[in-house]
Image 1 (cartoon, rainbow, N blue to C red):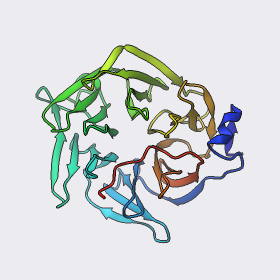
Image 2: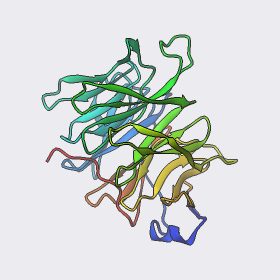
Image 3: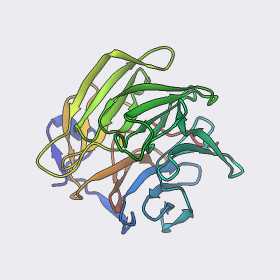
Length: 297
């Protein structure tokens, strides 16, 4: 069975007999497929083909096509509160914003004069501030000797290092009320949770391990999303792990692929979970809506 229930509460989220529908494969170009993002007003999904330096588009009835290239090997994608595309670019080691006219604004590319490592994933808070993870260090070819998590103010004027004691910070997501920021660590195999301070930084004293996602099967924490009830979804050993807001493990969507690289809510009701693996794209319908991504409408 693709759905492995740990708690009966999982049935409220996904039917036990529900299957993952695979929409395409062969992406990644030797790297990975990543960064799925539902573009609501267009009714399609964008995602990153990192190795082939492309942004792909999947649309119902149309399948997959090249949407934009080159992308500077972009990884994580989201939209800001005005609906503009935000991308983490591995190739240029920066976070960018695409303006309505197609021009590119640099959101962040250095910290205190030293270039960022390899920005990986990104989320935008309702006040317009942008949070992103920057793994990659230590690496003698990089300027920074740590892997950081950062906040950029809505006006792009201030870049703040929030925490730098992760080994491989990767996916990140806010609770529905934005009072908690979840950040996972791929190397350590767990998700940490931080309470938010009024100024947008983390209450470091609140740092706690929210959940451990290690197991005998392949897969590590990577992309992560939250639904409107506060349940947490994250790639882990054997598939996509689902937790309630208290950290109780409800079950796993065991899709059979070696790793879950990222996930995204989509469709008009935001109740479809889109899944990228290293080289494939899939989806599965759920019963609870995810937190929507802003649109341009």
